[in-house]
Image (tube, rainbow, N blue to C red; front, side, top):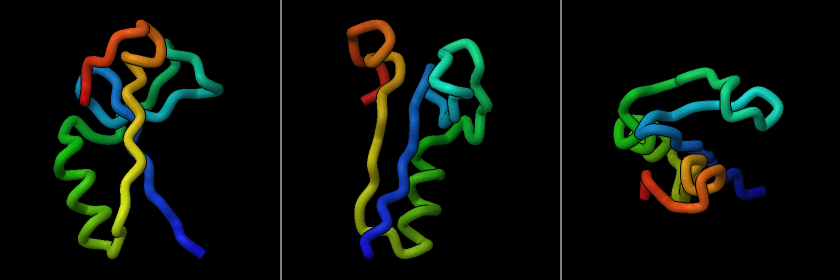
Length: 63
């Protein structure tokens, strides 16, 4: 089985949304690069990035 970690980006931060609501976010990190490195250090070979600003506003801002 291949597990692919994901980072959701909003306003340059790693977040998790509650039930997909843009206003209901939990911030996990202000440093997406450090978060990506931690997944790499844990053995991840791939990473799924989601630009939530782009998804909600129609214009990418984080990638």
